[in-house]
Image (cartoon, rainbow, N blue to C red; front, side):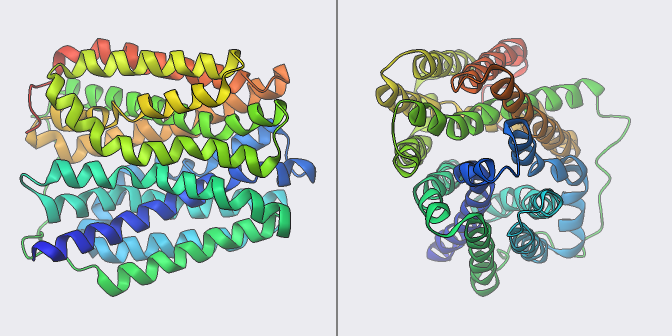
Length: 390
C-alpha cells in the first residue's frame, strides 16, 4: 500500500501537469496567433483568461459531482473535455479558439477541484505535507515543458500542431488515470449520504475569509501566469529568437519544480508564516521590477524563480487555517470561486495594458503589482490564521 500511494501521486501529478501544459499552450505559442492576425494583445489576454472562466461556474458544484459519482469518473470526464477543447482549438477561427478554450477550461476546473481531494484521501496524516509539496510542483513543470517544446513546434508546424499536442497530452493522462488510479480503502463511498455543509451555524465571516484567501491565491498565481506569458516578449525585445526566448523563460518553471517542495519546509522552520509570506511576496515584486526595468533579465528571472516558490505552500494552506471543520467543504468552494474570478479577469487587464502602452515590460509591472496586493491581503488576514493547519 505504501508503494501504491506514491504511484497514485505520480499519476495525479501527471494529470495536473497536463492542465498546466494546456493552459500555457496559448501563451507559449502566442506569436503564431498574433502574426496571423487572429488576435491582438487584448484578445490574447482574454483567451488566456478564458481557460479559468468555467471554474467560476464549476468551483462550487465540482465537489458535489465528485461526491455523487466518485472522483475518478469526474477526472476522466475532465480530461476528455480537455482533449476535446484542444482539438477544437486547432482551427484559427476566433470563435473556435474561444469555444475550445472554454471547453478545455471546464475540464481543467473539474480536475482542479477533485485532484486535491484525491491526494488528501491517499496521504491523510504525516505524509500529506510532503505529498502536496510534490503535487504543487506539477504546475510549473507543465508550464516549463510547454515553454520548451511548443514555440519550436509552432514555428515548424503552425498553431494547429500546438493545440493538437495539448489534446494528445490530455488523452495520455486519461489513459494513465484509467489504468492506475483506484480509491484508497478509507475513501468515502461514492453513494454515501450527502451532508449539508452550508448552514446557519457557520459564521458569514468564515466565508469572507475563504473568499479573501482565494483572492490572495489567485493574485499570486496571476503574477506567475503574467511572468511566464510576458517574459518571452522581454527577451524578444532584447534580440533573442522566439524559441530561445521560450527556452530562457522556462527557467522559471524548472527552478520552481525544485523550489516548491522545499518552500513549505523552509517556511515551517522559520515559524512565522504571515511574515514569511509577506516578505516573499514583496521580494517577488522586487525581482519582477528588476526583470522589467533593468538589463539583467536572465539573472532577474533566475532570482524571481527561486523566490517565487517559497510562499506557495503557506498560501495554499490558508483555507485549512481559516475555516472551521463545519465550514471547510463549502468554504473550499468559495475559495476556488474567488481564485477563478481573479484568474479569469486579471490576465485580460495585463493584455489591455500591453496593447495600450505597446511596452513589453508593462505586463511584468502589473504582475509585480498583483504580488504586492497578495502581500497586503496576507497582512490583513494574518491575525485570523491558526498556528497549525487542522
